[in-house]
Image 1 (cartoon, helix red, strand yellow):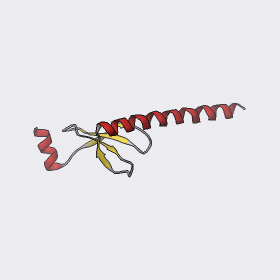
Image 2 (cartoon, helix red, strand yellow; image 1 turned 120 degrees about the vertical axis):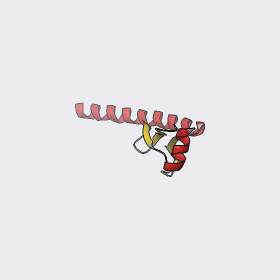
Image 3 (cartoon, helix red, strand yellow; image 1 turned 90 degrees about the vertical axis):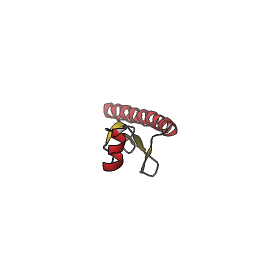
Length: 79
């Protein structure tokens, strides 16, 4: 409770805890552990179970795309 009071008075101290894509990240307050994420408009919003699910799917799609691009660049550099 003292940490929440501190954050209410002085504000949160967020740090990036997970990089989902280049544009979407998850943040956690180092004091009260409140979690936020970037929404579709680029604004910070509370990390609800729905946003966790969206971020998980987005991360999977992003990683698959990066792997395909990496394989494509490797195969094109060989030819």
